[in-house]
Image 1: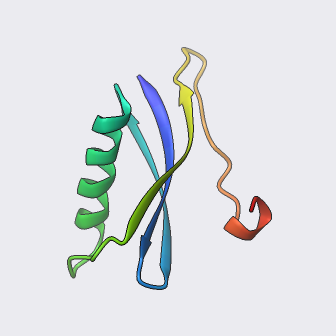
Image 2: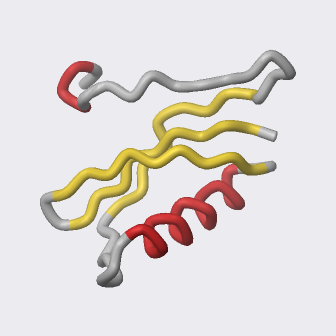
Length: 72
């Protein structure tokens, strides 16, 4: 399994999303499903960008979520 970090853009809003999946295509489906579940009104997603991926190790894996301007 892999841990994926995404930025989802909807209008002027940027939403960080983390997903666990076997492969990239499954991760994109997880992101879409979770974003739509998290908002009362269905979002129009403009863009989904994969930023990082890591193999999940037995000791654990994680990401530090920083404001976007700090890593651009």
